[in-house]
Image 1 (cartoon, rainbow, N blue to C red):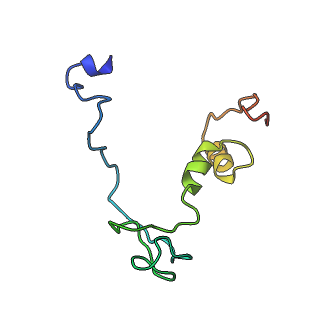
Image 2: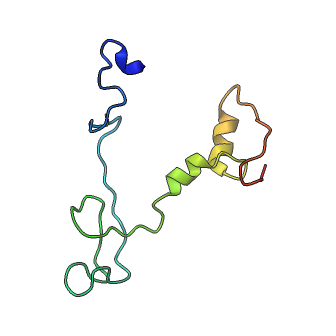
Image 3: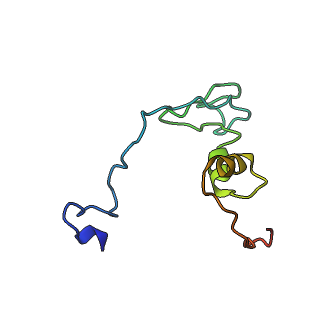
Length: 101
């Protein structure tokens, strides 16, 4: 019911521009390792970039950040560092859906 509060009429609605917290930065992709579209278009060895408006972008690690954020176990060095550097952090005992601690 948050959209019923004054000033929140668009809260949770579709087709709205997502507010940016940082400046836009598109990083380079990698060189094409195979011909994704046959003759013509992109070719093997061509550079790719996230700012391009057509064709494929080659990136061998597109989900690294998402995976690090989702993995909050002690085997993730980033999660371990965040835990150790945050005052008041506590360990939650439990079992994950895959059966691992």
